[in-house]
Length: 261
Ligand SMILES: [Zn+2]
Image 1: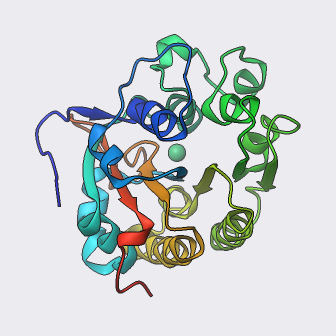
Image 2 (image 1 turned 90 degrees about the vertical axis):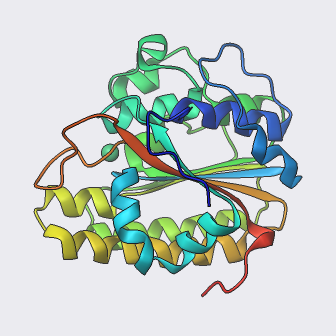
Image 3 (image 1 turned 180 degrees about the horizontal axis):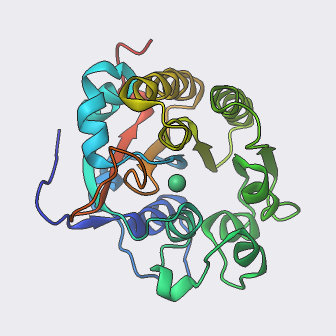
């Protein structure tokens, strides 16, 4: 297991360049750089799983109870990655474009729709690669007509139903063997905003962890998994109030995993 406790040398903006290198794509302009260590695993496909509010410290606290994410961290790499923003849409845009917020300029979902900056799924699809995006409805709408598999989930449904649906749709999409998949889980963040406290957060994380196990078992053995938070907890008593603001980032190759439940 690798972890950095000081200012992290890694950032969320490294995800897109890492995925692009695996997929053999050239992104026009980038602020991030590829995480070279992931190249040695010989992956051909990429699955990016964004877990809302998965701060690095939060994952450290949760990890003893999260069997699947712990297995991924041990078999792969667990990194502390700089969070570029405290806002979900801004951070997800950086994750998927490899650009800092001041360079992509996307502040909200309307901005994401109107933006002329192409994100990784669009670039992959334009190169003829099969892509899947499973996200909350508005985020998914950005990709309608641009990529092969788009599944939107209304964020008005209970968070545990949202995450179960995201899990089901992700597994279903993986059966089509996309080169690139992006999926999104909401339960931890919703628990924070609903004031459900530590146990509510843990419960949401356990559900997501079970989903991760199912997803990894469904993916083929040449898939690089990149799990990451969009920002540290940004509300409630567990709110991160001092630097470094980092999210958890786990890189792992599915094939190496043993003991998955
Ligand atoms: Zn968020």
